[in-house]
Image (cartoon, rainbow, N blue to C red; front, side, top):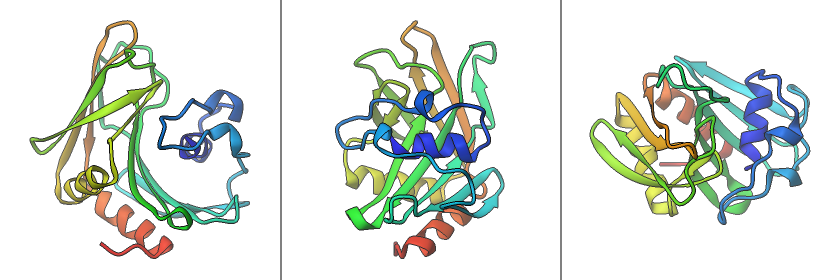
Length: 189
């Protein structure tokens, strides 16, 4: 997914574009098709609110707006994992909005689902490689609405090695970051 490669660059993680690319699920684009730009060239930071950071990207002449948040707690703490984060993306030129994804920092167990709980409301996410997504646009919208109203999101998954993981996100600041990308890409809720 394109936003995965971009978010790694923007977050300042020392990882090259080739290693950041993953095979995307059927509804996503292949990140290898997008050349990652250095921060400031086409990626604009819109704001930072309590751990949630919002950006706009015009690298491919079609504006993309997205927000990224990191978990406040990841368990087990001893598990070796790569970058872990949640994101919401708007692609107005493709009429795709509120695309929710979670990056686990490990390869999910093949064929497994991840469970997302937002203040007790549960959503089942499909997994592919190191990412987890909702199954359709209606669920994306419901998840974003729950995130905007919620206090805490917890995602549970199982790695290819069988390790059960839990990532806990504080949602303080999520609404401000969402408002920033909505405004930048002209999205109304």
